[in-house]
Length: 214
Image (cartoon, rainbow, N blue to C red; front, top):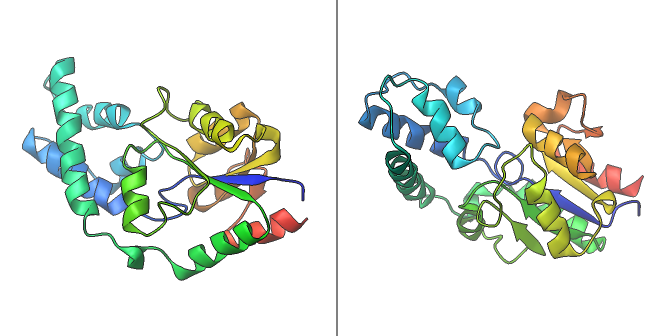
């Protein structure tokens, strides 16, 4: 096969937690007087670190916050978000997604997660996939968010596979940019399916099997 492994973004590819993020940021915003945080605003946060996401939220505030206050706000958002995530279960993992992942492993491919989320392992545990992947690179072991390729390069290192032998599957343009910057082949799905920088464009995850077999 042309590739030896696949690195998946988590949210928007393996599972979907956008609504939980939106509700958490909205609740946090309202606690500091921001009542106009919309789902469109939340869309800007995809693939972005927690602190960078907070800065986007605070664009709507006339107040100036100290760095210490910002850290406390970020921690509070995460508390709200994790309470919402507690409702997740294996039922939140689509059967088709799990079937595709099993088929890819059966072909001998190494599979990894490359996510900016610091809650990646918690989410994977909730949906029953924590021990499924060969490597997990997430917001806890990186210092730079996408479009910097650090999260994917660290995943490649954990897999002990060169970037050129790996595919990155992403639903965000920033994620595709990170893949390109790191020297990975890229697969765009969801919002990234029409992004010109994506090497491959798919609508369903099962289409990965066709790419691998080419």
